[in-house]
Image 1: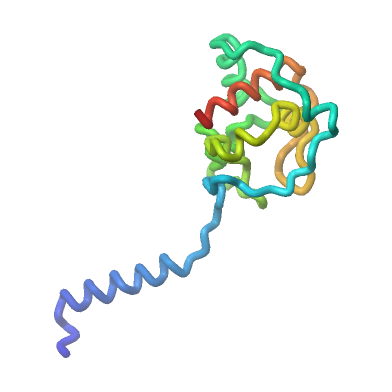
Image 2 (image 1 turned 180 degrees about the horizontal axis):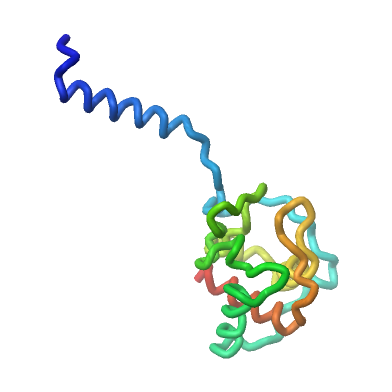
Length: 151
């Protein structure tokens, strides 16, 4: 076999590249859908809560500002990504990965009250911060906004 044959060399490079690519572990499962979690369940009184705010442009625009810039201690998009897919800023790593709000199967099974409780209190053993400085009104706005990613 003539190893100077360029077609043979290109094939070998492609094969090597493919083998390397397949052997690299996936670094983020943020787009996994549905996301299987062992998130702590909110207290019973929260699980029956429903969002009291109307789903309208005013609430969605206010929530978008919180999600992208104003929420403290950190803007939601930093971890969850601007499109809500769970892929935040470059360099952000989380185990488990940030919640993927674009996954309808995951989001439809989360009660409003569970989302409220997690945003307010954070989530133990995850990177989810407690947003205790947000008002109830702001949290309900965010819940409308993050649910919109799954539609």
